[in-house]
Image 1: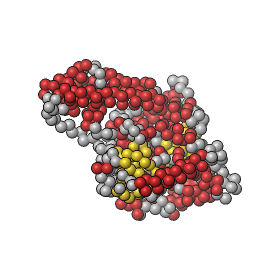
Image 2: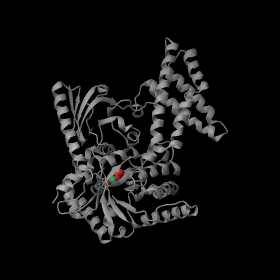
Image 3: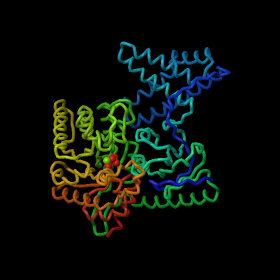
Image 4: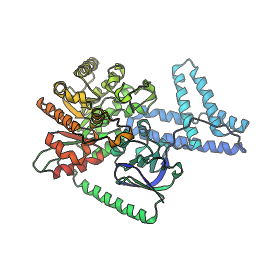
Length: 539
Ligand code: PEP
Ligand code: MG
């Protein structure tokens, strides 16, 4: 048994096999094979695996984003059966006596060239599909497991996980995350909390590649990883897991109960989610609504900008699934640690303080308007509110409102319905916004305090940098003063105020937030009932 220690970002016990996520190297080696027939058989097997993966993804997409958007996954399956494509691969294997990866790579290059030079735009676009299916085949052949191909529930290990990587993971198959690097406030840590699974970061180089496929136990309460645990440890951990499961079952008794203190003060408890697959957890944990939907997921798992229609379908699905409960969708907050290549964001000296979030939206207005149109259209189907990230000035809010007027007028002109009373809010996550919250409160319907960034910018501590964690102070009095000031200014101006940063889930400060008059706390779905329990215990 090997025992490793890291930093816990979410409690819980996980038991399973470790799967190291390797980054695709992109390198395909050419080597001679003794029996080309066996190599063709190896290729055929990879092809079948790829087709069944695509079918699984198709079914998942069908449920999540509808038939029109899922269709491409069926097209990819058909392309994998294309005779010209298959003949080319098999010919290269047989005539040159080489490995299948190489044959797929060469065939892909040739086909991509042919398609790219075609007159017809539709055919030109197929080049990207050829690349896509070929990369899938090569990955399968190289057995470079990546997230999409996880077939059984596993414990994911990685150097670190970027948001663009985590967004692609099939969450239903992940028992836990463990990483060599990472910081407790990173988006990967937030994802683990949203998924309600144990996660440990910062284990360091002792987390060896060699542990791949080994049986492990993760103790998310203490930040300990047991590789090939002995019998005594396994028994002890299973006991701990049973206790934790019992605690979770007890919490379920709080479903349907009010979030009310002993003296009768009520508070709204909503959930933070990263994508539509979290809605089940929101409903199971009896959250009153969604207090923060990070809409970046729509942009990050893609090769190009999501269309208005694609976004509309997803937003409508979310508000409809929540059946009249409030859904607050935050507009695009990309940049800094959340990257998507096709945005072609410039390299910056200080990305966290750079071209990101609302700054991108107010510069590349076409991207912003597409999202707003989709959101307003979806608002006709449920209880939708919109909020804007990284605000620092009243002028920004004025500009946003002007764009919203344009969007509404355009929709009116073509007779598309939207919610006339849709609430607009802003995130208070820069010290500037908190300091002028009296002025901003006159402009919007609500505030949602983003304590993750508010702490980062107030204390000048990069939330991504693990070296700074000893200086990071979530309870710094400056943060509480800013929260209190924001709450006071909100109420003086008759608007409501919530907290959607990670601090909202910290049970040791719930009472302080209630005393400040905070109206809503939005936390990961798995924390809603814990927080309800806490609120109900407060005098
Ligand atoms: C925050 O900054 O507190 C917040 C909720 O937004 P994110 O964590 O997505 O930056
Ligand atoms: Mg933020």
